Amino acid sequence: MLPSKFLSWLIGVSMILLILSSLSLHQFSNNYDNSSIARSVFNFILVNSSSIHLKQNGRGDQLKSPPIPSEMPKKEDTDIHEAGFQVSGHTMNMDERGQHRGSVCDQSRALLRVYMYDLPSEFHFGLLGWKGCANQTWPSVSIPNRFPPYPGGLNLQHSTEYWLTLDLLASNTANVDRPCGAIRVQNSSEADVIFVPFFSSLSYNRHSKVQGHEKVSVDRMLQDKLVQFLKGRVEWKRLGGRDHLIVAHHPNSMLFARNKLGWAMFVLSDFGRYSRKLANLEKDVIAPYKHMVRSIPIANSPSFNERSILMYFRGAIYRKDGGAIRQVLYYLLKDEKDIYFAFGSVQANGIKQAGKGMASSKFCLNIAGDTPSSNRLFDAIASHCVPVIISDEIELPFEDVLDYSEFCVFVRASDAVKKGYLLNLLRGIKQENWTKMWERLKNISRHFEYQYPSQPGDAVDMIWQTVSRKKLATQLSVHRKNRYSRSQSS
Ligand SMILES: *[C@@H]1O[C@H](CO)[C@@H](O)[C@H](O)[C@H]1NC(C)=O
Ligand SMILES: *[C@@H]1O[C@H](CO)[C@@H](O)[C@H](O)[C@H]1NC(C)=O
Ligand SMILES: *[C@@H]1O[C@H](CO)[C@@H](O)[C@H](O)[C@H]1NC(C)=O
Ligand SMILES: *[C@@H]1O[C@H](CO)[C@@H](O)[C@H](O)[C@H]1NC(C)=O
Ligand SMILES: *[C@@H]1O[C@H](CO)[C@@H](O)[C@H](O)[C@H]1NC(C)=O
Ligand SMILES: *[C@@H]1O[C@H](CO)[C@@H](O)[C@H](O)[C@H]1NC(C)=O
Image 1 (tube, protein in one colour):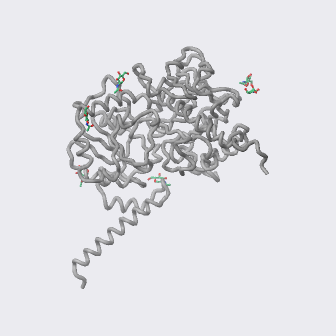
Image 2: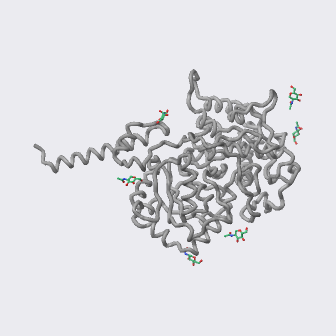
Image 3: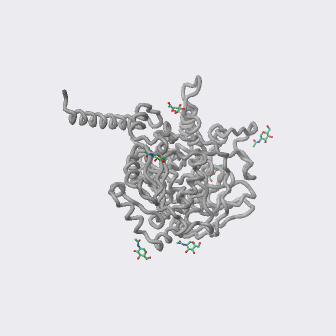
């Protein structure tokens, strides 16, 4: 007979092995596979099944809330300092560019001249179910809400592609009030940037599964076609694609094509699933997610004393890469009465609740998940809830003109897991200091709004400005490439 001590030791060890093996199964399984063994083991071990939903929501585009064309309230007039930008040595701000009314923006005053390929509609609005007339590539955008809306729910968080395309179309449309940021030109040799109007995130969200008799998914097919198209264009060949702008906001979008189009400028949510060589801050643009919660009007933003929750977090408990910290934090924080820490994916009515929760909280936690970024940060900003960022690899939109330390609290992952560290830090931030960050948040939240038509200093305008700043880096890389262009290659 085995001594019972030994027996329980044996059981303990095998439990640990079981957990470890389930974790690694998860770790190495493909992203969105349902690894049901690992999941059930996980459920079994951690369970509080009423509060833990191991829902895989990376592709979670299941929500069926109505499509939302933008309904942002117009913001107070804007302070433009952080939106100033520098092009070839002189600073110019949005006042000089102004907001033109009624007429199409003057090409010579625009910040960025953009040539947009007239790709067939299957690459863009066709994915939204739009069918133009025989020779019509683009819907008319002269009347808001008359063009196809982007699908609602979690799809929307990656809708950057849609807003940028709409804005380019609007730049040639009379009677649309928008900032004179980018203007679409018809002659590619007059363009600073060539825009590739492929709705790659929607293509991934909607069409990445092989259906019926298809050999490859529609998403894959479109990417292959796109690569073929681009590689055949003189515009691409001219600089190897360096002046091309490709939007791939969903971390898994352009999965097949990205390696073949690596010189292009990407508009991304983060670099988590890209190699350093393929994507980096020198050439690429980090764009915000479109937030899911409603933004609170600046005038009604609850102040320090009106926010009874110290810190708010809601998210899936189990995340791969870097997400383990969520569990550690959960056990450190779950007994604090002024902390809201819940697991579960955001459901249809959950968005409204999350919005309420964040607006009642002083701080909102952002912990690395599947990827270093998530739309939670932008929900927090829209709620004027000071973000606490625990994600060492996160890249932040517009950080060259925004100092996030003015309105966010950054905590290294290694510190956050120390007992008491986070709570001491947050409880130590007094009303006066918090209010400063909150004031700043109220000022900068407009930079994270996607809307049609675009407004000065909103997300679309900020993205064009960022692209315009990258132009110099692109130029540098082109000039370097030209160094030996006179010598005969032998
Ligand atoms: C994952 O599970 C969900 C339901 O739980 C199912 O609808 C989906 O098809 C599964 N995906 C894969 C790749 O097996
Ligand atoms: C499980 O979660 C529910 C709701 O969040 C809670 O009421 C219950 O006490 C929890 N049970 C355990 C064992 O933690
Ligand atoms: C589209 O086709 C119609 C007739 O088929 C023609 O009258 C019209 O000019 C065409 N429009 C463009 C933009 O080519
Ligand atoms: C495009 O612009 C270039 C340079 O300005 C010019 O040489 C060319 O003729 C233009 N092409 C067309 C079709 O207008
Ligand atoms: C809070 O603000 C005061 C003055 O505004 C400053 O002296 C102090 O260093 C700040 N404290 C923290 C923790 O930031
Ligand atoms: C926010 O903007 C207003 C005016 O737009 C300005 O008066 C105020 O100083 C700004 N506050 C901060 C903290 O930047």
